[in-house]
Length: 309
Image (cartoon, rainbow, N blue to C red; front, top):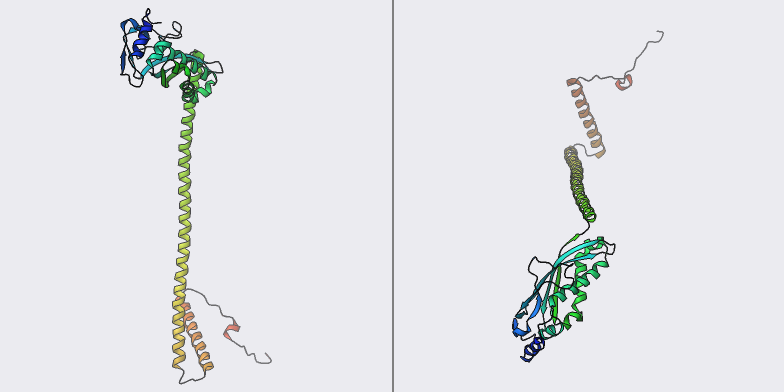
């Protein structure tokens, strides 16, 4: 994992003496063939075997250093605070910021990123229970990344850590997997039951709202009908009263010259109205099927019985 032979020192002189700086360097910095170094290579989908290489992955010789953003895949085994073993997978994005520091400090920058990120993520997960991790997994991974941003471990090696993302996690223990699957099934069932109950409640609420609106409309209808009946009665009464008043006025005005006394005109008007009422009653009795019962007092009858009989 070190540069070959004594060319490492020459490589440092070549990189630094040529004026190559992180800010002004091109995308790839060529090195002397004698200063070829070992670099971890993790292709897309190839993960590091933790049992065979805990701190780094497979190596190959390279002739240049890529200063672009690098992507490394990881698969770590971690434990939560309640001792549940999980296997987490994800991606780490990093970049070589200072070639000189990197060559002096490490021959395996990607392995250093892999190992340091692993220790930070294990520490972050170990502070959370399984339930918390399931709910706040992204927050926990972000906290592990934030703890590395200001870490001098990477700056001393000329490396800049850009981001860390978790794409998958799963329990290692079969019993835990079955338990989580059952929890997921129960959670889905509960969500479905709640949605079904909400739908039934919405239907019931709409029915109640419709009944309330119907009763309110009925109340408005009754009130409107009552108002209409009252207005009809008032109109009919006003019309009848107006006719009666007009008739009485015409009656009094017609008798003014022949009967100057107002009291006499009033008595005559009352007598005339009583006669009209009696005429109406007689017509109704004659044309209808009603029976008329008259008492002697009402007929003003007197029976004269001769004395001695």
